[in-house]
Structure formats: structure tokens, C-alpha cells
Image (cartoon, rainbow, N blue to C red):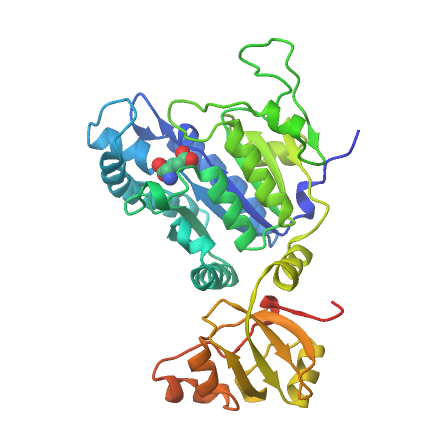
Length: 375
Ligand code: GLU
């Protein structure tokens, strides 16, 4: 049997918490004691220097009871209204329980476009990165109040997987009302066996995922396996674990029952592969020799070393990085639109505000958004 990794080896972890864990469906209130215990788990990870991000569901479940909406499938406008009401209490409670452990929480509400459109993807990624650098814990949910059917995830399993890839997390933990993936539906088949490690998502694994979730949560096992596909192909390991118990994350660390979905890669390698291979080039930036040397020694690309811009790219697009002889030395996601980049070429980063009339990023292409030939 393939061994599962140890929780202590991870440095950036996304924890997804489902609605049914957080919200007592009879009382329509948050399960405060459970949440406080989870905050202890988060604090333990945080204290050893790990970056933690939380993807929390529950706004609709909370809001619907405050607004006294019926216990059946809600109409879109009702779930939007419920989310508007519930999200206040949800984020407030996270801020309180984490605050009690001296951890600052920061709320981020995302829509599908924020993760799928490159310009906005870069913005969300930078915000997350900054919050983590400031040692805050981002608490993330879908912006259900403005998300309509065409532009929504609808389930936080896949949303959490995209957040994990966007943040280059090395582990995603889905806390659920089931302790892992079974080889048959456990509620129908008493002989169903839990699968502790999934080295690769095969058709057989997908077939085991079946359908349906619980009353409160949207995602069943199917969206969890889809999340695992998104995460593992971006170099992130994923766990499905039982969240109904107290301190569920420390239970995993102690070897508790769960399913691991393993990735053969890691977030940095997978991101480099994505940038170098699967993105269409929208233009190029040409550098002087000094800038090429700086990139090779591991630095970001600053506007000062840029001599020419071609193409009509937008912020977040992938561009070729050329040397003075027009040879491609690498590729990267550019932080400025082509027009702005042309204005900034050759200028010192200190002048960015003067040139553009507004403050901007010091780097034209950040080191983490770039892959050089041979890397
Ligand atoms: N974003 C939804 C909420 O907070 C939950 C989606 C899900 O249950 O996966 O209510």
C-alpha cells in the first residue's frame, strides 16, 4: 500500500469547511464550540509557520433561517438574499474565533471570473499572497449574492480547489460529513470500504464518486473528486476527512481515517508547466543584457530593463521574454496592459506612479509568474 504523507510536511494548507458542519440545521445557528475547536487546529498549524486559508460555506444556510425561508431548494434570488444576510455572521464568527487565538482573519468573496479570467486571477492571487505575508488567515467564500447561475461555482469543493491552485497551496483538506471516498455508497452497502490513498484519479475512482450530497451542502462526492482532479493536476495534494468530530485537522495529523488524493507534482513545477506550455502568447517584452542577467539570478523583471514591447496584451496575459537578439529566454504573466507596459519600459519602478497617474506593481513580471528556458 502507498503511504500517505505526513501533515507536518506541508507549508500552505487550504481547509474547506462545509455548511452541514458549521450550521446546525434545526436551530439555524453556527456550531460555535466546534468552530472554536477548529480554530485551535488552525492556530497549531499557524504557530509552526504554516500558511492557512479557509474556504467556508454556510452563508446561505445561515441566512435562510434568519430570513425564515423554506427548507426546500431555494430560488436563485432567495439564495442570493440568504447569502447576503448569512455572510455577515459567518465572516464575523470566523474573525472572532480566530481572533481569540490572536490570528487576524481577512474575508475574500470570489466569483468564477476571479479564478478563471487571468487579469482577475492575478489580482486575487496577489491579495491572498499579501494577506498570508502579513500572517493573516484568508476566509474565502463564493460571492453568492451577485453570482448568477452562469457565473457561479455553486459548490465550495471546486471553489476550494481553484483557490488552492491560485494560492499555490501544497495541501487542500475538504472537511465533510463523510470520512473519505468509499468503493461503494456506504449508506447502501454495509461492506463498502474506505480508500485511504488514491495515487491517481482513474475512471474507476470517478465511478465510485456517485452523486448527491446532504441536505445543506451542495457538493456530493462527485464535486469532491472533481476538486481532487483540479488540485492534483496543479501539484496540490488533497484530503477528504470527517469534519463532524471535534478538532478534525489534528485527528488527520494523528493518523485518523481519511482519503488522500496524491499528486506526482508540486505547485511550483505545475505552475511553471502551465505558464510555459498551455498559455497562448499575447505579445513580448524585450530586455537589455543586464535585465536578462538579473532574471537568471532569480530576480523579477522590472520596467527599467525593458527596451521594447510588442502585441496587445492585457494584464495577466502570457508574454514571451526576449533578449536583445530577439531570442526567447522565457515566458511570464505580465502585470501591466501593453499600453502601460510601453509607457513604463526603461523607467525606474519609483516613477510608476508619475507615469501612470496611479501606483502600480514594482515588477513588470513577478518571479513567481515567470518561467525561464531550461527551468
Ligand atoms: N457558498 C455557499 C454558502 O456559503 C455554499 C456552497 C457549498 O455548500 O458548497 O452557503
